[in-house]
Image 1 (tube, rainbow, N blue to C red):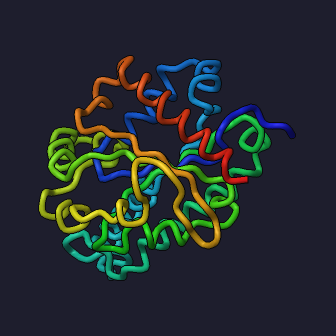
Image 2: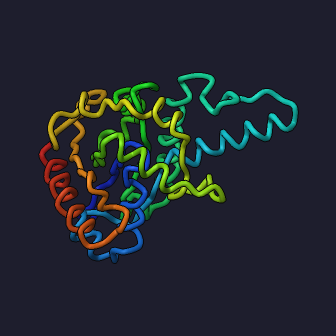
Length: 243
């Protein structure tokens, strides 16, 4: 099946609360199908975010504790018992992607958007990218949303809704946990400059940095659309240099 001129797989990564979910929300609901394809090289979205997997583990551990059983994934403070659970989250993304390909529309007319955050404390993006399957890596392009640590902290506090802690757009972390897990980021160590290629397991992965220091994502207005068009246009050009 011939695909239109759209990305097959986009990886959207950043510090927590940097604007990833707002970008997905904007492109999904405020851009029509034709403009999404022509201006952004994106099809209908098939979003795979590791947060629902992570949150389910928290819920399962709480239920097990109420039953008088041992927690499986996390300790009492909500930290993983084993560091390899961070890798397991990526393998769950791989699995969900392969399952999604059973739908012919996913292969033909959709862009799969993968979303997660990683800090150096638990292996960083170097470790996480290495866990992605070859099937993903050979099609992958990365949009990194860059914000300083202080902006991640500010927006993490701002978006917290205690009534919806499981919400993609309204979940949050305590300040101390956010700092421990995500303050130190290794993206600039594996990707040099604001665009180029990152070597991962024998693949050259194109990337573009989307600067969000002024928080253009919160309003989800025309300026966000303008900047995304430029960034994704550059990423599209890079993705066609690989061959």
